[in-house]
Amino acid sequence: MGQVSITPPEPLVLARGLTKRFGASTAVDAIDFEVAPGESFGFLGPNGAGKTTTMRMIGCVSPVTDGTLRVLGLDPATDGPRIRNRLGVVPQQDALDMELTVEENLIIYGRYFDLSYKEARTRARELLDFVQLTERARDQVEPLSGGMKRRLVIARGLINQPDLMLLDEPTTGLDPQARHLLWDRLYRLKQQGVSLILTTHYMDEAEQLCDRLVVMDHAKIVAEGSPRSLIEQYATREVLELRLRQEDMANLDGRLDGLAERIETLPDRLLLYTTDGDAAAIAVHERGLRPEQVLVRRSTLEDVFLRLTGRTLVE
Amino acid sequence: MKHSVRVLEHQLLVYRRTWRGGLFTTFLAPVLFLLAMGLGLGTFVDQSAAGGMDGVSYLVFLAPGLLASQAMQTAAGEAMYPIMSAITWNRTFQSMISTPISAFHVVTGMSLWMIVRLAIVSTAFVIVMVIFRATDIPRGIAMIPVAILTGLAFALPIMSFTVTRKGDASFPAINRFIITPLFIFSGVFFPVSELPTFLQPIAYATPLWNGVSLARGIAIGTIDAPLAAANLAVILTWCAAGLFAAFRTFPRRLVQ
Image (cartoon, rainbow over all chains, first blue to last red; front, side, top):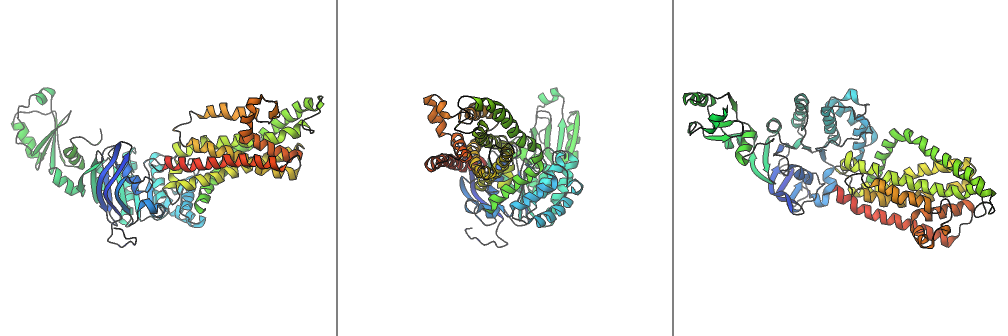
């Protein structure tokens, strides 16, 4: 910390007691985290948890209220433009230029990074190929589908060949096919060694893309680790989901006691956390319960979040 | 400077795609106004006992005023909806400041753009004036910078105000209560000395009257240094105040 040169072991992002207040409300409350070079790091949490505010502080467009933040070894308060020169930003809202063509959107953005028109045009062509939009290069942006616009924004964020890519909810609002195409592209970037920081409220997205993540809730970090380690630490290997008739739900009388390490009661179903879901399902039947629906599945980050906060992620 | 020019480049790229749509109004508005007011109404004024205005035909009297007020209207138009769009709906400015460009450069770059935009409409207007023989080419060229500065004296304060708003609700009021009254009462059609005495100081404080006074001085050839310097001082004061305000309101909106 405090040194300006960037040596490989130094974290790309370092936050200590990072805090953001808007008037009386605290959007980010003294969080600590580090992102290593080459790492793909995620902020998982519900809307309003402080993910976007954190991303904006890393992106040097929101001043830090308190605590320490270093991005690429530099201080956003004094070196904002130098840091932003090496970041690729994919904001939550696309913010594309509707008056310009697909290609022009990339070229003018390249100009912001002081690329020559020739260089910007060359990179734009390569990036359109990478995000599979080559045949739309001369089209207007407006008629593109949501997934195509998102891919264009990712291409735009790559025009300066960034050291670090910031993706704020990269696939929110997209259909499953568009999401998978996008994940595929981001996974390739990751393989090419681009460091990614992303926010999401989808656990499958976090599991797909993040080497390591922090779970945020109410402006604080409530857990940190790899998706696998978080699941191991905060959930069991398997989950048995039971949907019971209303009268059974009301009169369980301890009939499920001892069947699982932990039981969560949701409005419409019960979640039994256990190492062996099938065995637990048989035991439920042996105790005379006849659920309307039985599902055995592996634990996900959703279960981790439920355990940590007592709430589901997407409500 | 480099980053400000990038912002201007963005505007020019967009303008390259949209200028055709505005071409008609850019030339048609001056033609219609000069025809109707300058030649139509002007015939009556010139035939009256006064025999014109300030010793020249009404067309020559009126045209510089229309030039300055077209600059005002263009500036107000550019400083309202397009700026609101770039900061709220399209988030163009937010895209810019996630690169090495800062909010400061957005202000300077957009100011450069306003100058270019005003230069285009003012030049078009002067061409029409010359065609209608409302002025000659040297005087016409000399009036262009006056029109640009007059426009800028509106563009900068209005744009600094626009970015403090969440939506476009206040724009019709700006047109109705500021732009239109100024157009009518700032000496474009008749001298401000004809206004009630208590209204005259207000007119003298506006950028439009000062712009009209300067442009008309050039057109008629009656320009005198102390008045011209005072006119210029008022216009530049408005420009400076607007720029200063924009340097505060743009970062406050964009960087939070």
